[in-house]
Length: 365
Ligand SMILES: [Zn+2]
Image (cartoon, rainbow, N blue to C red; front, top):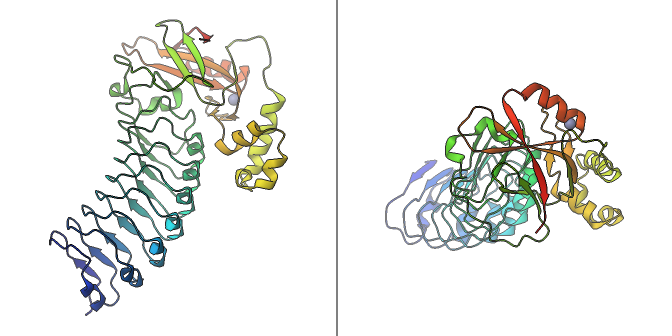
């Protein structure tokens, strides 16, 4: 039989029908809203398949040999019962769109970063606790939806390196702060109901909506505060949590020139990192003078200079500013980070009418 698309949704199937084998050159199958529990291995021989719709079944795991579907571009397995993904998922080299929302995943394999064709990833409504750093290696990823993963408290800073990312959705997670850098191509961000967030980096202001203003009912953070760096803002005396990796911050203006040799070295490494990923080269990593340095490279910069014409990566030491909009009723705090005092003063010169600075001090328990 010669048909390239099969519509077999809503038919109460308990298994994928063997009749599929009767169709040559099958490219697309709709098996949505059935009662299918497994993707049988014989199905993986239908290598002409490009689009598979399995939303709303009872599938508990994916076969390790999924990669045999070498032409698969679109795979919707949302609203099933998956608890993990096979590591071999990274071998689906043509996969462009992967919807695995509404499952019970607790982690993503690091091999997700091998999906170099991936453009849309929907992992919303799972039980993920973290995103692997490697997600930033999905160089074509355009849309990332991680909403409704109530345990996720941090998004890897390295997503700022994702040149294709345009849409980021993270509603109803437990984010305690946002990545302080965003690729300039990001055009849509949604972060409703992340109540532990106390402040928003200024680069998010273009997406800012009043709904994001969580400060009427901030939820105290339940995580241990060890190893975190806190600042006390002196208008409302809110404690702000700065990104992990922050070691020292300075106010503007400040008398010293704060660039450290350590950060200079990291800048140089970052430059090489672009060509040869250092964080995946164990031999090279062991040569680095200290573990922190390897970690910093692996995690990427913790911020970028808020002066958009500069955007230098920032690692451990930077100039820090807390601002609010002048003449606005919003209580939202925004934060800025600068590589140098010069950048801070330039930014203030350009934006001093729109915002006013709020004093802060380092807070120690
Ligand atoms: Zn700068």
